[in-house]
Picture 1 (cartoon, each protein chain N blue to C red):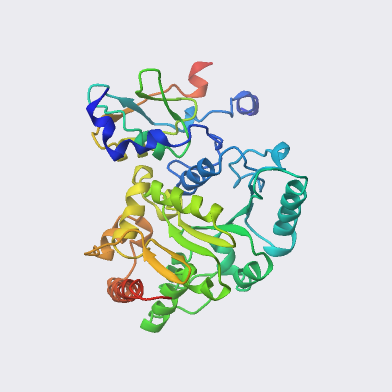
Picture 2 (cartoon, rainbow over the protein chains, first blue to last red):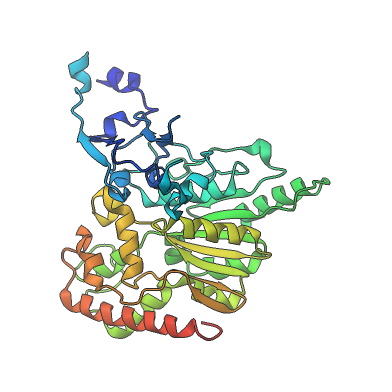
Length: 87
Length: 310
């Protein structure tokens, strides 16, 4: 168990997350409010001007989805295998 | 070109893109303090030096830029004035003395509100010593728990359980309003802000950095872990705190008070309280009394904005 904890990657927040934000590009108006309200600076702009999330750092708090004026962000449930199920 | 790109809602795109805030595990989901620290650090650019105890500090340390940059230190305990600020000012002055063409920069100090609750002399001491610093106070309303403790016998309650009186609540609301208290220390600029109104917060930080003299900003930072609400509601709770008049946003400059978010019809305080699970056992009589005291204080503040002084 101790070995498992030490080898765990502590630089990302993947295992904190139950939901992940998903952008609907048809509804997105590229306002950037999701980027402004992310407490973990995980949201960034892509080449087309749409926004995307760095899933290494997203904690799944849902603040971006709550603040989105067009409600284009939905929080999808993410079911991840537990550490002992992958090894 | 998109037709919507002319609307002011697109202001976030004009903000500086560089991130001085480190993503990581040091803050909880939906942390209001991390959110406001990120916005403040955006305004200060890459001239940031930060240090502090590991669990609380979410900034990178950039000591190589001492000579030109703003200085940031977060103080969570201990002596406010003697060690930290002295060292910061010394570093700042020694850096700017060497013929730098840039204007001398200000030290920025982040302080948690709980220091003022524990150490009553911290606030006047802080203002007596240093005259050209930006103090940013994170207010996560931890003092509300003191009020909750009075409703039931508790090991760490300071007083025996009793019903709150009107005078007690008035004192409490007065103490909550830090910029009005520090006005006798004559800061050049003091304000209250909230990360739910990001552009307002960033504008105030920018003003505080540019003003000549001491500046003080008190930032309300909703805390999902301690207030017991869903992490996605962080910004909404901040909006409710402002629209109920419980945490009015205003700025004081040259002895004049200006409300930056004027609320015509303040919402009932119960809307703000019912979203927080920590108030589940809060007696309704107290809430009614607190509502009266809050409305009085807000009306008083609105009346003061028309004339000079608080």
